[in-house]
Length: 303
Ligand code: 13P
Ligand code: SF4
Image 1 (cartoon, helix red, strand yellow):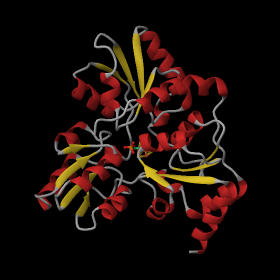
Image 2 (tube, helix red, strand yellow):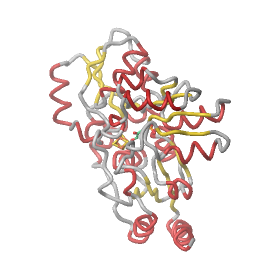
Image 3 (cartoon, rainbow, N blue to C red):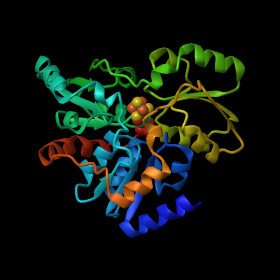
């Protein structure tokens, strides 16, 4: 209780807002002013009037907030909270790929560095990938980076032939086809919700392919009483809060993102006290990256 009070006082003093991703530890989700998926958090970061944004998530998320709101101070309470998938491609590698396909447009997943976004034409999140790809002319050649599995999902849903990069999320690929088969055998009435970052065999067994906030929205409307959840298990806290009457089974206990769990209440306090670690983006990169990110937040998902 003392820690929570301290955070509330510091928040007022610094005119700060706390944003948390759906994979954050339960106590952090509960104290956040806004909780959401990558798209929702980006929109919130852009429209917030706060002077300081405390980003409880991973580095690329805080960087996206800094791209959208350069006048605000963006704090990431643990500077080593990175995203291994985002680190699977850098700007030099993307430039080389573009040289091989000079007539292609580049769509990058928001799970990428600011430098990669600066080399891209469009950015997207798992909530609006299909809508972003569909917004591009049918004759356009498209490079999609860095998540091969989200790219495959977009290719299937749109019927487009995308040039993919072999990136992946180490947390989502730990969920296997056998995990889903086993969970379905144990809970035959359950609806399987999977994140598009999962591998193809897992997605084939799913009833619903959804971003994290889309999963939360889906269970509030659905009348089913049981769900198998194939994404990072931190989301189960929010799902249970939405539907205390329903049962949620993780596809596997292994689906935990160690980086998402690096943020703690103590680190939020230290961050608000010291106003560090600050996340900033060099202005030339920020301006180029912002074009792609602005396009992402303009294209709303259909679900
Ligand atoms: P969403 O919350 O946008 O679905 O993203 C999932 C993810 O892996 C974020 O790192
Ligand atoms: Fe990156 Fe995967 Fe962790 Fe999301 S869950 S931050 S994609 S490693």
